[in-house]
Length: 404
Image (cartoon, rainbow, N blue to C red; front, side, top):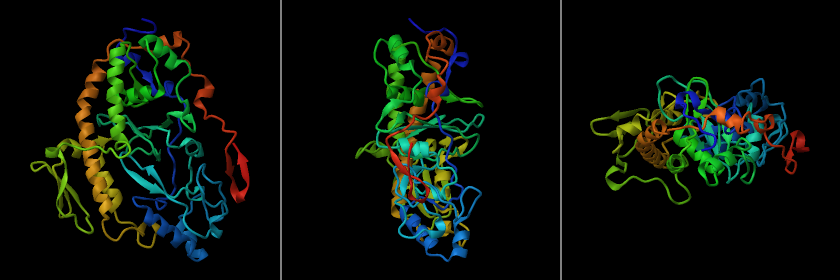
């Protein structure tokens, strides 16, 4: 069989950077208030900023070296926002967009580059309904949890703990064209497996079998086509859960395992606890059950997902800041999101043993040496850079247009 090796998985896995070579560092917001769990708060914060007197406006912005009231900035690709300095900003808030703010936590962001220290326009340029982003998670020794998460919305990319990873779009251009895959890799895998291999299948395999050490995320590539097919199917299920289903079909647990609100959540919950004996999530005086221990114990980069999700909605903000403009009481949609998050984490925990079995039983591998011999590696330098886009006019500072 072409391009295979008998070396073990510890010595012959392939860095994810050599499979999906173009990557982007996480966004750096520079200030927390342009991001929120609800869009209405963002619009209220924007209104408070642009209607404030100039001396107060500067304090509300929370200026940094990268962004002040008097700096202009280009529009983010695909977004409509002003480009003049914020000192002259007026009118309604740019329409907030959904983003992934940490593992399994979708929030809303004001897509205005004047508010974001480092917005990574190259990511916005390829973000559309055909795109998929793989987000490497920070490494924490012996912490467990997924090494890579996937999302369809644009990710902020920050890891909850440890060294932050990279954001890897599946496609280099809008419209789902030009896969972000090392040239020649899919053709080589097709030769080994005796059938066509797609970029989407590679992404699914990475989600099912990828792991990481202190340096990087690494992926075992099996020589056995049956192992590949089994892993791809498992990865597709993982991807479906990472994306909270598709369309109207949402993740659901069977009746006996489905979480429900057993006692109403309070208007202003401040504490989240877990009762292992009763398998209940205690939200202040509220109670959600059943919640399996595997969902409560689900960690990413050493951080418990449910605790972090709750803290980002309830940790008090400094009075007088824009971050303090938030719902006065716990919104009902947050309860629905919490129930869905419990469901997703439970179902992912159910798949974890299958993922461990896949990694330990992957068998003979296609390793870096074989990929070099086949001419797939080393990765061409151009594949690590973003694609040049020549047909998308984007508004620069002061309303001038640039072609990128």
